[in-house]
Amino acid sequence: MEPEDGLSHYQACLATGRTYHYVDQRPKHNDRSTTLLCIHGFPDLWYGWRHQIRPWVAEGYRVVVPDMLGYGKTDMPLEASAYSTKRLCDDLAALLDHLGVQKAVVIGHDWGSFTAGRFALWHPERLIALAILSAPYTPPSTQQMSVHDIAERYPFFGYQVYFASEQSTTDIEARLPLFFRLVFRLHSDPISLSRIGEFQRHLLGGTEPDGCIVDDKELAYYVSNSQRGMIGPLSYYRTAKYRFEEERDAALPSNLRSDLPVLFIYGTKDVTCPPVAVQNSEKFIDQLKVVPLSGIGHWVMVEASQTVTETILQWLGSVLGPSATTHL
Image (tube, rainbow, N blue to C red; front, side):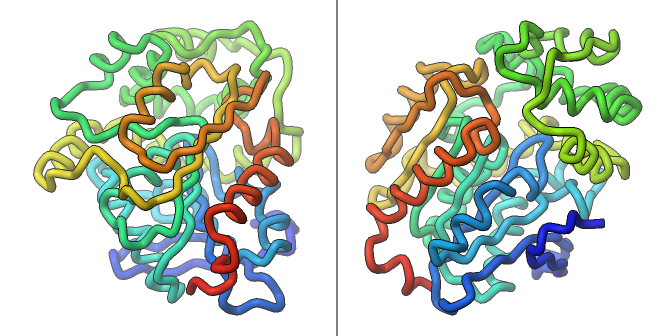
C-alpha cells in the first residue's frame, strides 16, 4: 500500500519485458516541461526523493521516480546478471520511451549515481544534464576487480564484501528493522560499518544506533516494502563481473559527453565519499560543478533536504535557462 502522499503512482511493463513501479508527477499548467528522472540507491526506494518531488514540480518540472529493479513494487529477478548496469540503463531508456520523453535531466544518489553516470555512457543522447549525489563518477575499469579487490584497495568499501555474499540476504531478511536503523543511523553515530566484517558484526550482534535520520513511520515504509525479499537490492553488489564484461565488450569511453552539464553534491561527513574520489572524477567531466555540504553524511536528500532541493533548482536554472520548459 502506497503512503497517502497524493502523488501519482503507476506500473508499466516496459519494452525490456520488466515491470516497473514509478511516480510520475507533472506540473498542473505545463505539459512540455523538462523531465527530471530520479534514480535511488541502496537500500532506498522512490521514497528517498520524497522531499524533492513536490518542490521541483512546483517549479514547473515533471518528476519521474521509479522503484529500481528489485525494489518496492518493481520486478525482482533472482539472478544477479539481471541487475547489470547496462540492463538497468536499458530499462530506464525504455521507461522514458514509455512516457514519451526524448531527453531528461538524470539525477541519482548512491547506486543511483553510478547508474546515472553509466546511463550517460550507454545512452548519451537521452540526457539534458546529469546530477549525481554522494557517489562520484568513476569511469569503466580497464581490468576486472572483485568486490574483495575493491575493499582491499579502498577499505571504506569493506561493507560491500558482506552485501555481495549470499549469506547477507538471509541475515538481513531476518532483521529488516534493525538493518534499516543501522543504514539510516545518524552520521555522528560512533558505530562504524564501512570496513570488512563491521556491518555483519553489528547486524548479527543486535547493535542499536544512537538515532536515525528517518522517523518511525518512514522506517516502517522501508521495512514493509522490503519484506518480499532482499535478493534484488543486494544483487547490485553481485554484478561486478557482468558490468566489467559489458563495458569492456562495448568499449565504453571514460569521459562523459563533453557538452553535458554535471553537478555533484556530497556530504563532507560521508566516509564512503573521500575527497580523492571527488578529485579523480574531475578528470573525466568537462562541465562539472562540485558542491560539498559541510557536516552532512551520506543521505543528503534527507539530512539536507532543502539545500539539495534548492541547489539542484539553481543549477538547473543556470544550465537550462529558458529551455527548461521546452524539452519533451
